[in-house]
Length: 164
Image 1: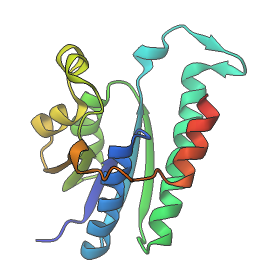
Image 2: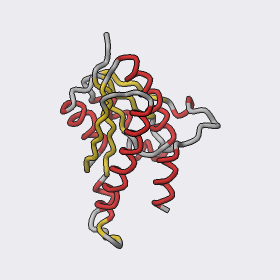
Image 3: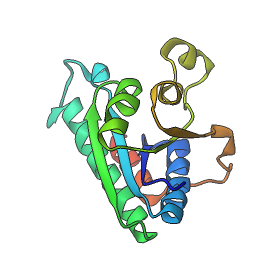
């Protein structure tokens, strides 16, 4: 069985980027489409304004630029079909219940939670929700699998610096 559409949620963390790199290999072996996704959690930015626009608008622009960088990397490795998606809301609901369905994903590759144990207990893990609710296969890249000397790509580093 081949995968035709691989969805990869990206948040700029090392583990999500590592899942992305693994996803490039899977996409190439399967000649699959990559759908790169970032969710702007609008609950975090409710009614807060920043210079030059709302924080939500700035986060949306950041996400588009970040995903364009990932798209460039995937294309440079030979992935022929890459689409980027930025949505607003709860990643736990939107990724498995809406985006995966809309793009007919047959595999979701995501990083395990970047949260510590207390944050996971209070907030829950996005990867846990994806595993629970997705109607397709899910591959979770464990944080522990990311090599200690793993470096973020230049796009992620650049955009992290813009946030500071």
